[in-house]
Length: 434
Length: 166
Image 1 (tube, each protein chain N blue to C red):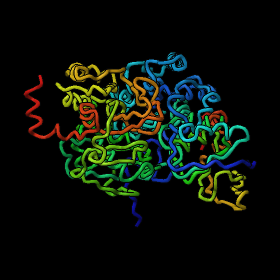
Image 2 (cartoon, rainbow over the protein chains, first blue to last red):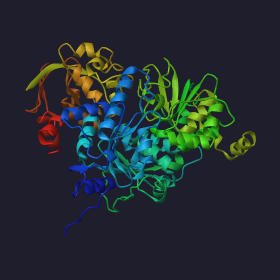
Image 3 (cartoon, rainbow over the protein chains, first blue to last red):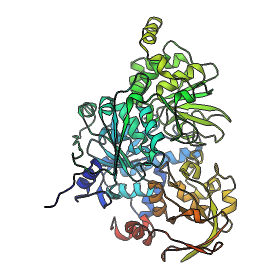
Image 4 (tube, one colour):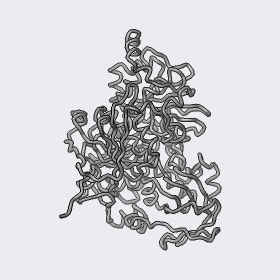
C-alpha cells in the first residue's frame, strides 16, 4: 500500500493552478490570477512585451501597474517612465494606479484583486506580502512579469516549505515587526532561500490582518519565495466589501511534509532592531538604545497601514518630535490616509511634528521624500537597511516597529517603546491628552 | 563557446541595491548609462576595471538577494561582466539573469582568487582556473532554464513558441 504524502499550502495552490499533482521540487507551468508591476520594474516589462511582439495583456482585469516608488515624479526621467506606464494602461486596458494611490502591496489586496487561494506574481520582491491573506504571491523580474502579462502563465519550481510557529503571547509594546525581525536574526538573510514559509500558531492567529502583512512582507528578507498563512475568520472578514471575487482558502494537510520546522516563543521576544547594513543584523533593542537618530520614517509596504499609524499616533499624541529629528510619515494608500484622517491619527502625528508625504513608498527606496545626509542615523519601519538604500551610502539605517520609531523620534535616540505600554503610562497619558 | 576573462572577487550576500542602487534605477531605462554605477557602493571602480576587457564577477553565498530589479543583471551585462560565479544565488536574481542572458554559475568560489584568469565553457560544463592550473566543478543549469537559455532567453523563447513550451 502506498501512502500519499500530504501537501503544504504552496504545493496545493501550485497544484490547483497547474492542473498537476505538484510536490516540492517539481517544475510546473501555472495559471496566474493576477500580475502587477511598479514604476521601477514595469518599464522594462513593457519593453520585454514589445520585444516579444505582444501588444496586449492576457486579461486586462488581471493586470495592474502602480506608480509608487518614485511618485509624484521628482525628475524628468521618471516622468517619462510614468508616461510610458499610463500609455500602456490606455493601450492594453490594464489598471493604472497613478501617483498618490499608494504602495502596490497595499493596493492589490485592498482592491480585492487577489483573494485567498490565488496565485499571483508581481514585479517587486515584496509581492510576498499577500501570503498573509493566503495568496501564493511572489516577486519576479520584469521579463518574467511580461511573460505572465502576455500569457497568464509562468513557470515555477514548487518550493520546499519551512514551517514557522510562533507560540506564547506577544508582550505589550512588542509587535509583528519584532516577530519577523527575530526570525531574520535567527535564520539569516538566506535562511529560507528557494523555500516558502508557512507561518502560524496562536500568536499569528491573534494578530490583525494588517499586522500579519508585516510578517509576510519580509519573507523575502530571509530569501523565501512566499510567506504563507492560513485564511481564518479575520481574513474573510477583512475581505468583506473588497471586490467581487470569492475567497477559496487553502489549508495545509495535517500530514504535509515540511523541509524544516521552527518554533519561536513570542513571550520572550522584545522589541528588535535590525542594525546597518543587513536585515539579519538584529539585536534586542536594549543593545542599541541611546543611539542618536536624525530621521524617523513610518510607512512602507511593511508598516504603513492604519494599525501602524494608530500605534504611532497613540504614542505621539500630545508629545513632540525631538527638535533635532525629522519624522516622515507615508500612509500605504490613499484609503489609509483618509481613514487615518478620519480617526485623527494624521492630526496627532502632524501636530507632534511629523511631515506627511504622498501615499506610496516614501523615502524607503532612496528616490525622494527624505534622503538622509552623510553620517546620519535613520530609524525606519521599512524592510531593508542596505547601505545606500535610502539614497545615501554614507547614512545608517536601523529598522524597527512603528512603536519603536515613534518612541525614538521623541527622544532623538533609539528608545524602547515598552515604557508607553505599561498600565501606569497608559493611564497617566490618558489624563494629559485630548 | 568558451569565455576567458579575469576574476573580480567580492563577498557574501551581495544585494541588488549594491549591484545597482535604487537612486539610479528609477532615473531611466538606459542601461548603458546606468552601468557605470554597477556595484558602486561596494567597489566604486568596478565599471572601469571590468568594462575594457570584460570579467567574471565572483562572489560568495546568496548573490543577488533583495529586490526584483532586472536592472541588476542588465547593468552587469552592460559593464561587460561575462558571468557571475557564486556559491549560491538568490532566486529572483537567478531567474532574471537567465531571462536576460547573463550566465550564472554555482560553484565553490573559494577556489578562485581576485585577479585569477578563468576559462568558462558553459555548454561543456568546464570551468578552468588558468592562474592556479585547476578545474572547478559546477552544477548544470536546471533543464527548464537550460532550455530558456538555449532559446536565447525568455523573450526569444516566447517569440519562438508563442508562449511557454517547457
